[in-house]
Image 1 (spheres, rainbow, N blue to C red):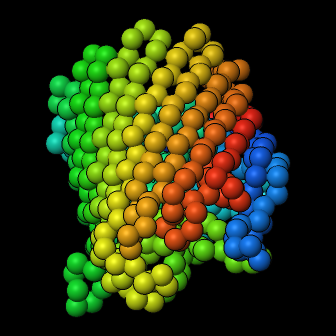
Image 2 (image 1 turned 180 degrees about the vertical axis):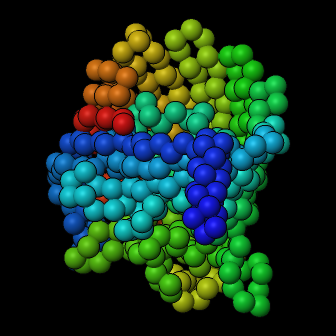
Image 3 (image 1 turned 180 degrees about the horizontal axis):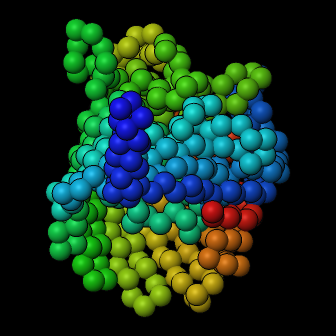
Length: 409
């Protein structure tokens, strides 16, 4: 009798597994490149009070200044029947230089979520995932033409997906005649205060023929923790937005590092494209307000108050010259960050990029950027150029060129 029950249980399990029709896909990107920058800080202060830096620097990079960053992941789908599907995705960044994990050493730091797709009703997911600006607006920016050198200063608007949202619930609709929408909410996890450290976002997009447009709003309470402090190496009490540097170290993210004491960060972004033959014309605008500076006094070394704003207007042109060759250019103008009666900073940046496909999986590419900075940055200092994720310049100008290879699997 026991043998009969055992056989029946095994056969039932096999039938259930077969009918589920599960699929799991391993995928990834491996990118390696050499990057040249004409100037990089070695120290943020000196006897004269100005940053010090080398006249030029060359480096082998894991893709953070190239066309894209290296990653690997798993995505899966299980058919549950009745139009329902279970879905998941796990994605981990890594350095091709030495194999170390990205996102501050966070396992599956790029994405880690699970959820249910309900046929035409959309998809519900829970975990570590992208906000709606990344879902809807970022795809229209097409950074893969000129890569990570082209991010807006410190990626303050997160349109380059620098920051992931922990403890989040997200809904994305299916497409209705080219229209899609979605929303995300991240719980703060603070006992006695359900709004502290919370983050919410909502967005939508429309694609019709040659025209596409998308918009999003993201609101983060205590952004130093809820937005910038989500990686494994984040500080529980220190400044996660950046650093003022020292006599022996460079600044990091000087465009926003002084705003860590904000009570709320709100970003509104919109982008549009128009396709004509092999050409794509694009425009985008994003604006971020750091509200309530000084709400966290321990992070307000400069004794700021108020609500400074950073805004970027962008224009781009991309062209698919042949099935194998594509190139593009874009120009970004960023202004704002005025606090305590001081003039804010301005950043003007020109981006260029080209890629040649050796196959469907392998590209050779070259990207370049030139940035000019002026005014006063968030640290109360004369603004210095800071391209992409590179070390900021010691001067108001910086040039960077990156060349490498990108392989998909």
